[in-house]
Image 1 (cartoon, one colour):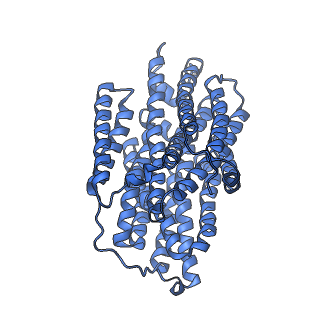
Image 2 (cartoon, one colour):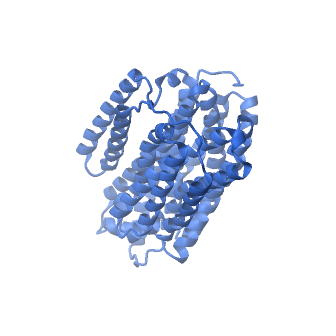
Image 3 (cartoon, rainbow, N blue to C red):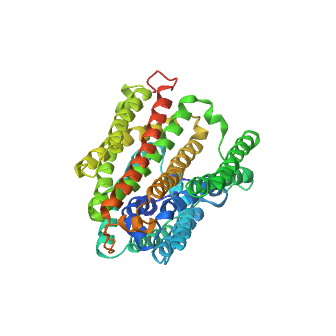
Length: 485
């Protein structure tokens, strides 16, 4: 891309499109989690609630590395435009959903679009800005993510409380149309397209099979354990075939040479597991507050917002921390504090104070803001220059995968624990009604249902604590004992 030929005006038209697109795809997670209890209650979808998030995250995870390869053959503009249009159509269909199954399919379509938009925002910035300009532009674009994290829960809560949950999806449609028009009118590509790029089709196949069977297997754990076991065996075989394929293919989807550095591998694994922790509090803090404390969707959403504020603030200190401390020391210290805060939730009773959720969310935000940002910086620094793009896509895939898998695991835990406790004439659908603070049904036996919901939420956070213990041990085992320059 010839920088001199790109006039300043055109560059900022493209950046405006990239900024809005980043906001649009990132706000999707925070805005939907706030509306989840109302969606579950209205569509009677407690048994499938994790799929509302998982379908979106799964298709995003599968398509992210594929679009990265396609952008080299078809051009950034075409692939990005395609992603924005598909995402917008998926948003419209999600808002029009009459049933839980329709919503899950529409969310999957949204994810197919997001898989192109999210990684290509970084690639486009690298294309149109010089290396010196890039860091500032990336920081500016990251404010779109920060903004979405701050206003997403507020917008979601407002729309649910004053209109209906359908509007949390409709709100993205005008944004998608604006981005598509800006790209169409202002983004003129002058890049030589590669005609001989080899696409790793078998790599794509085994990655897709392993991700789909993994999620289906996890989803079936609480209802059909035999099917779950069979699917997880297929997952294991697919992963082995994927590793074998990537080792022998000349231009692999995920290059094995990156993982020769143990410290690099630990960055990817840490970001993946912490993303699994992240989806836990994003989904279940609002559910806990709305179902047991009967607070509004807006107030419940503010808990997620408090974490996002601390995440943004903490991420500004990452550069200074890395310059003065060994990465392992930073990660172990912050993950330990997060672990202690989450342990308190396992023992929380029905009188556990609401403010404590804000404190835990803030601690979570500081820990994630520093550690995940550090994972991103180090994963790019620890590989050769020609692999920086691949390293970024692997980290993006890992973060999507962590959220996707754990959304399914938490959903399975919640459903299983609820079903195991049903007694005294309490039905699964009655518990479903309690989950939403907007539930209009008068529940007579709240004294029996509340403890069922509380125990199920306790077990979800036992899962979160287990994840934090695992990631703590992994970072303790990091062989690097030096400050990385």
